[in-house]
Image (cartoon, rainbow, N blue to C red; front, side):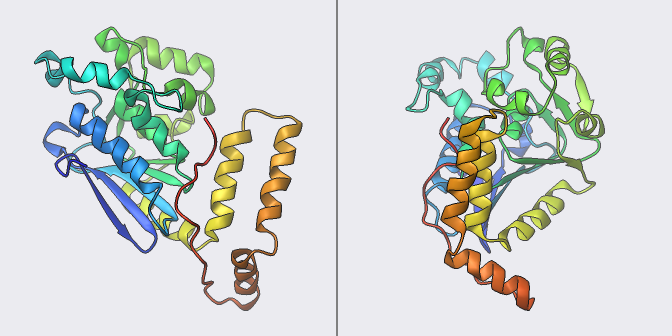
Length: 274
């Protein structure tokens, strides 16, 4: 992984993934695309993770594609690599956003400053988005004569009505964090989104990781589908939890009021087949 693009810190069962190209507002060039995707996929094999916090250092979360990099020809050699599809049917442009959805543990995006275009689509791949009130959100691609193509059709329909999605996309307009939260694009507003994301991750890590991962898998698989199969999936997942060591630890802690000691799940696995 390119250390000048992304850094990972793991402590107390929580991984913090930081974009560190702060002088460019964490704009996306070839190295950033690769580093973010490697970071997300690498966490699949990390033992003991219970939550992930995703954020950007410097003045912004991520300002989207690095237009200067494209204009200087930097994207020419990268384009062929980026459009190749993997076993899940996604190319590298899409994986940088959708890979966070596939992690079995919750991902919390802490957003401040600019969250434009590709940056917005990366944030959409998180389970939860906490935004600064003055953060700037924009589906920016129409400004450059393009359509959003980083997995937005797998993420945005979970959050917005179609007419709102169209308006934001057609106009390439910018809204602040307060507005983004009112329409459902983000989860909540906080003056210090990174501190809030860290607090939430700490709360999640105190719950049974088996139960949290099963809940993410259930919702990712079933939330917008409906039907008999989803009812069956609820039962299947619950059967794997009832009487398990971590479930019994949660029960004993709930009765005694003591802090539970949970065993960590084996690395690997994805939240849902995509």
